[in-house]
Length: 153
Image (cartoon, rainbow, N blue to C red; front, side, top):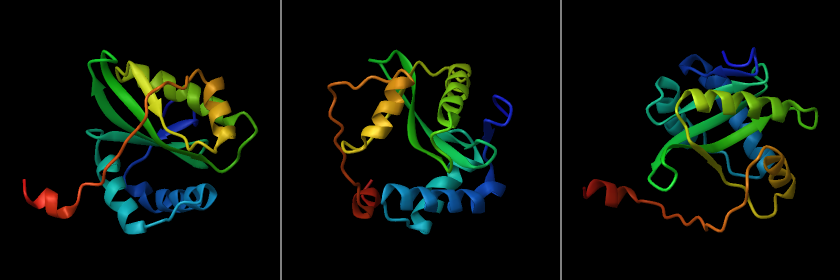
């Protein structure tokens, strides 16, 4: 446990709770919730820390999903905040979760953290700016890799 009950490493036994929390996040953020896709992605993260780590946050009232990267430009190990969700907002809980997360990431050798927000989400961007995140000039681009391409390797 990190920072008292602020962050707790999620494990396989937390999968049902995680699916509930992720479905709430999807409703809040207006994303489609696909339990099969989410389960496929969550299970490896809950089993070990090879790809990243999942934390239950704020006494199991939220979660943070971190995935690992590595970059010459950053000088080593990076962490991407893939998702963060807290049921209760506006009470200082997010700042406490972020403080505990920074301590945990430093202990894991992370030298730089990234996150992505949608352009229209001004509230989230203001929150992250208060946590020390800066907007940069990079443009994220993405491409789905199909099952056909995966089968051709």
